Image (cartoon, rainbow, N blue to C red; front, side):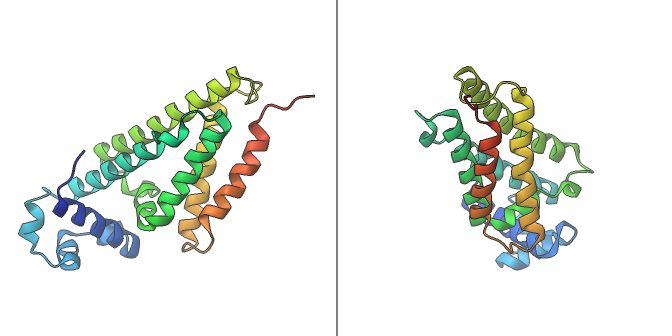
Amino acid sequence: MEFTKRQAEIIKASIILIAKKGIQNLTIKSISKSIGISEPAIYRHFENKMDILLAILSYFKNTNSIVLETSELKNKTAIEQIGLIYSNHFKEFNENRALTSVIFSEEIFQNDQRLTDKVLSIMKTNNIVISQIIKTGQKNNEIRNDIPGEQITMIIMGALRLIVTKWRMSGFAFDLKKEGSDLWNSMKKMIMKTYK
């Protein structure tokens, strides 16, 4: 989905407001005040707050697709591909910290099916990509196949989500890229095929 320059400005301002003051304090009034335009000007770009939240998720989905489809993944082993996806996600979150306050806040999505569906779509895309890489890795004897690929995918994605949530809730108190790299190195040892 493509956004106009003004829509992108509104989306970024909204992400920052949610990160600083919480979703309950995100209003059209607070957005207009933060970027210095009138409330009617906001309504020319988005019908309501829910449409802004959907746009934030679409923005993340676009960014996420870039991370998953990067040309760096070509001609890499399955382990290297997953490692790159991990490091690219941590890099993106580190550069856009406020985004984690939206993406990893389930309470935001509980009352609107459109938001829930958008988050599920993002999760499904991630799972499909990682799962396919794992299946290829298992077929090529890189990744252990005594554990179903779907469960390895869940462990990998769950660990990523957990560390990012911990980082956000600690007030970004630790180096996400370093902790993420350490986590991946440990996980890699657990999922790699070992030869006796």
